[in-house]
Image 1 (cartoon, rainbow, N blue to C red):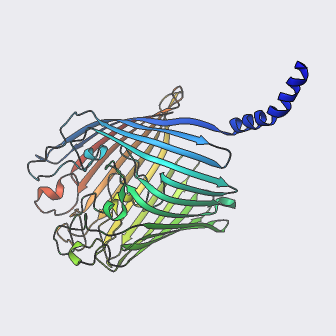
Image 2: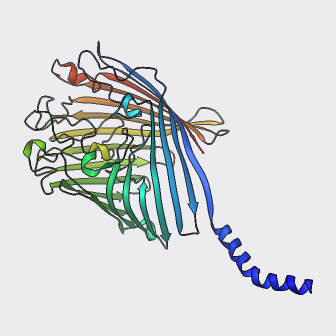
Length: 447
């Protein structure tokens, strides 16, 4: 009797136990993250204040997979100020604060020593090359991107769709309704986020008043990456910012042989609706449009590469795209500077990268870039929103890899920017812009 009862219980419970085991096998969770310590210093010209900052923190992420298609992800970000200098004290000559160092923390509240942000919280589904993600997330595009050069990157909230086809062809669509700009520590409405960074000047020379006065509810992003021939690929992006602007970015890439490549870029902007506000003095996109043209010639081997890039912002209007949403990945982009806010602008940059073996167990990847940036006169507000002088920009960027510590990857960035030609004798034009030397030492440990 007891034997028959065991058989009966097995017949009843076995399917449930099998299903439970199958679900357990298909449901997995894992922690990952990064610990980062960031030292930054800027040496300004003459009596202008020098700045130093030391931060530690990073992020902790948990990813839970239901099966091969569904997953939930969440990441908590942190930046802690170790207070080696009081960044709330302004420079006595200009009345301004540090430009780079305060960006390690919450630049909207520089007295806040600890920043904590639930930066990612999303549900995602993927199947047969299609992917959907809903919630808070990190996206990487030419104009909206993490710009991960501080403690907490730029993050977004919304719905994102991707499709990956054959031969790396694909498309993406996104609908965003919130942005957490780098160096702010909070998610903001789209219009609210425009102006979280310094706003510069209107074309008439007055201080821009669009921060807090820009009305925009969403951003639509579309992308297509197409392979037209074996050697020709075209990448197209479009950014529609509700009631502000539409930005089209086109990048053809042509392979000229085993080692040579030629790339072109064209960015075209038009105003949408009221440009952010129907009142002229409160408007962000205060022009009809703008155009940027660029060309890049590159030569590369499996280990090293060199490139020559040129970008031209045409006189039609200032290139305007919210700095709060990411860095501009133009061919002439160099770390610690931007072209946004300028028109009638030229930039020429040469870059070289190569690995260097420091020992049998230590490798260093070095990236050298030298740029010459021809700006309109700093006092010409119509063509130079941020009063940035003509300058030369030198970057030396080093990444270290340790064979015995594969998760440990420090970075050292050395930057010097020198003013060119005649610059008005005004400390505001030099401060944190030119005739300055900067060091960033970043210690990353990924797990």
